[in-house]
Amino acid sequence: MKLEIISPDKTIFTGEVDFVVLPGSAGEFMVLPRHAALISSLKKGEIRYSMNGTETKLVVSSGFAEIKDDKVSVCIEKVLD
Image 1 (spheres, rainbow, N blue to C red):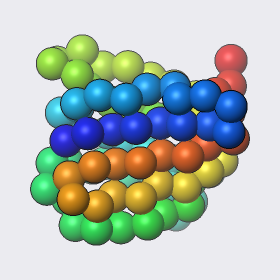
Image 2 (cartoon, rainbow, N blue to C red):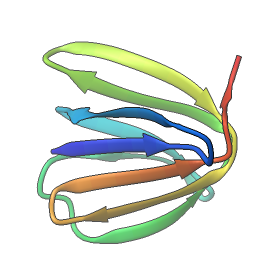
Image 3 (cartoon, rainbow, N blue to C red):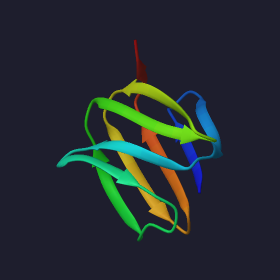
Image 4 (tube, one colour):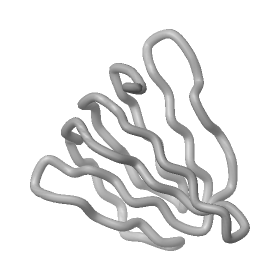
């Protein structure tokens, strides 16, 4: 499954992942390959994704995610420290 994380000023990550966990406005949710199409708003929180068994975490501001055709597109305001 392809994951793309972007902010207004740059692309933060693009690549193939095993799964991604997103901080949805109604609670955290996991996206696996072949997930049903979905659009969700995101709250400030942690995005976690796994690439070849290695997990990466990013703390992000609010935004939204679109899941469609085995691709997860995440648009956020910024990555927080």
